[in-house]
Length: 171
Image 1 (cartoon, rainbow, N blue to C red):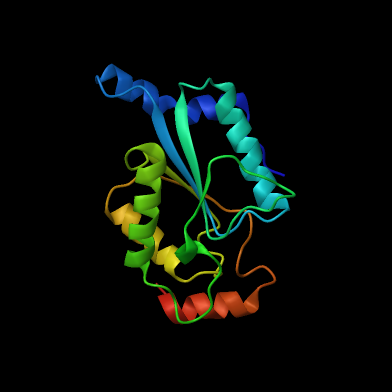
Image 2: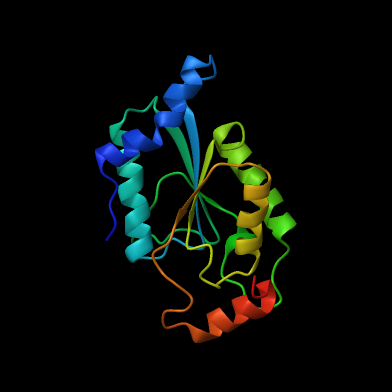
């Protein structure tokens, strides 16, 4: 399982310190984005990253976890907010603009403003075809993205891979 170290968290918080020097607010806002928080690997990865961020102190950053379905009682995740358009979805794809609006509203509600960093897990897995388009739009908008891959559509998920190719083309 991937685990954030204190060193990697400090590197992630570099933006906060840079912003402080410019006179901006002191607290980094982070939105962690994943389709679900079911028991298993990715939820544990998210829980470890949240713990590592907490080690930096409660004034270091504010974090919201945006997910497509409520977290499991067996593996609770603090600060989780459900964004239904983010959940697993088969064809036809949800509208990426609707997903962006939903995530923006949820992040603003939880953090007081848009996040400084969007930490997106497995955006190219093919479980929701709006997510790759969302990430593309966020990048075009100049939003800061941390994309964490730990599963791949082309690795044992041939239907997802074919769906991604059909929907997104062969850029």
